[in-house]
Every structure is written in C-alpha cells, then in structure tokens.
Image (tube, rainbow, N blue to C red; front, side):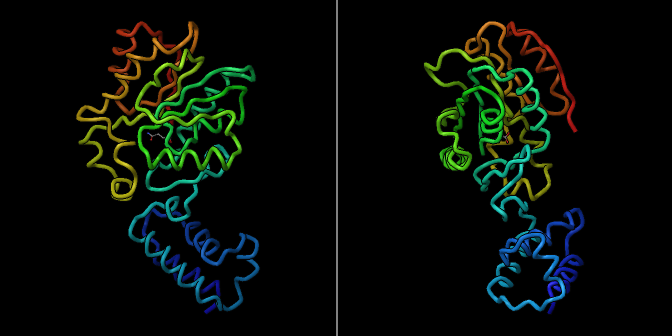
Amino acid sequence: MLYSELFAAHLEQLSPGELSTAVEVLIEKAFAISRTQFWIRKNQPVRDAAGLRRFRGYFARLQAQEPLAYILKEKEFFGEPFIVSPAVLIPRPETELLVEKALVLLGKKPARVLDIGAGSGCISIVVALKSGASVTALEASGPALRVLKKNITRFGLQEKVIPLRGDIFPTKSGLFDLIAANPPYLSEKEWRGLPPGIRRYEPRSALVAGRAGTEMLEKIIAGAAGHLRPGAHLLLEIGHGQLRVARAFLKRSGLQEMELVRDY
Ligand code: GLN
C-alpha cells in the first residue's frame, strides 16, 4: 500500500464533521514525518509497520470522537503550540479575542495580571510572551496544574508566569492591573446537550459552572473589585444568553461595563 492509498482510504472513512486535514496530520504524527515529507512520500509504499500501527490507533481514537488535539497532545493557540491533555480544556479560537483585548490594554509596560482558571495556560502564556506583564496563573485542578507547568517550561516563562493552585482569587496576592478569565459558564443542562466528543473527553469542571451556568461569573465579578487597582480591567468570556445576568452582577459589584465583544 502506498502512502497516498492509506491517506485516501482513511479520508473516505472519516466521520462527517471531521476536518479532512486530520488524516494528513495523524499520518505525519504516526510516521514522525513533516508535511513536506508526507507529500514527497505519497507515491512510496508504507514500510514502517510500527508507524502504521500507531496511525491505525490514532485513527480509531478519532473515529471514537476523541478530539484531535488530545490525540496529538498539542493545540495551537495564538500561533503558539500548547501541550494539552484531557486534564485541560482545549484552547478555543474565541479565547484569542480575549487575549487580543488584554494585549491592547496592557501595552508593553510592566503590569500584574491574574488569569483565573488558567487550564493549559494559553491566556497566561500569550499575555506573558507579548506584553510586559507578569502573570499569576490560578488553577484549581491538580492534573491541570501539571499541564500548565509543562507549558510554562516549554515557553521558558518561569520568571513571568507563576502557577498557583487555587479556585477564584489567590490569597495575599496584592492588586492586579488586569484580571482575565475564561471560566466555566455552562449549565448542567447545556452540558448534556454538547457534542459527545466534548462531553466525553474534555474536563467537565472546565465547562460547567453549576445548575444555572452563571455561578462562576457571579463569584468572579463579585470578588474582582477587591483584587483590581483603580482603573484596572476585568476581561471575561461569558456564554450565549448570559449578558443580562452578567450586567446585573456588574451593577451589584460597582464595576463599570466598558465593552462587549461578540465572538464567532
Ligand atoms: N484558560 C483556559 C482557556 O481559556 C482554560 C479555561 C477553562 O478551563 N475554563 O482555555
């Protein structure tokens, strides 16, 4: 069998909704070859038996709806490769919008940033790479914290990103110039309606806030004022249909709404 035949045969079996590039990417990973090598080899026979076994294993996982990022153990965010495992949420493109906003607000001056529920660390790390800020990356889950630390090391940011085990606010941490969070904001009911690939593989605690879905937003907004310097900013990702209640939380907390951005 030629590489091109292996490729074509699996492209045909791909479940609808899966990107056709997934087959190519899994062949590259299984045979440890680059994109260029893949194209060069297309008309050569597959001789690497171990590579073929790996490929079949990966492909079976994809067919079982495991997200490609978990199979590859990597996900690109803001053009940077992050280590991921099922202990952390897979970084989403919408969250890049939140990071862009943070970078505009921060500029290049030294600043202190808090990232609540850092997960893989995608927000913390891009902020640390592209601004003058140092970041406290707070994460409640032990296994997620281990992935976060691996990413901090991968990007050589041990001096600028401090991983911390904790739920919403760190104790005795002083005031911040910016707080960013992509908190869990789904209700239990919404979670049951998610595609199986997300529901079965991604961490529930990173997605579900509670019965209503707004529980974490409420806690973050209520506590944020006490951790922000005057004139500082809170950047939050919220769910579809949560604007009214988020505004009510803001009003109660005395924070002022500056801007609302609709994502994809
Ligand atoms: N901050 C991480 C992200 O945006 C994790 C968020 C989460 O686990 N809810 O991807």
